[in-house]
Image (cartoon, rainbow, N blue to C red; front, side, top):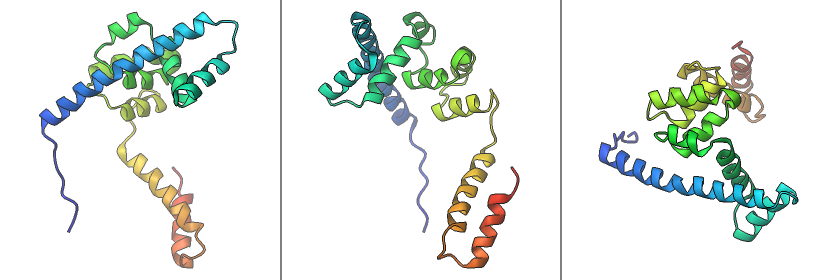
Length: 168
């Protein structure tokens, strides 16, 4: 017996979307606050300030840096222009560097534009990568693990090596 497949009701998705939108507001506010603090102490090493903020609040340093970097990258004017996108979607667009705007515009035109899809488009220079490519790469990673497993039968290991070595 398989796992039942359930299509969540639209009201569940909308309620979660609203909660996420409300929840992501704090990320902008926190990022802006961190920017203000770093600007207030320009003579102090940024990593030292981040360390203190993280260690003294129980946060992770990478999270503090992430909030700061995203808030610094996207001005309030840009956030207003792309207010239909979440903090996470804009953060994904930042991954494109100077070309972030083309991906933000694409995401705005293709809502709900999952973060994974935005990142995949960036990684593939603006093109959608077919789903089978991701599956194939996952299969090759799994085949490599089996090929390296000395407990697996030799013929299985050899078959897995063929999968790993198959040209992409």
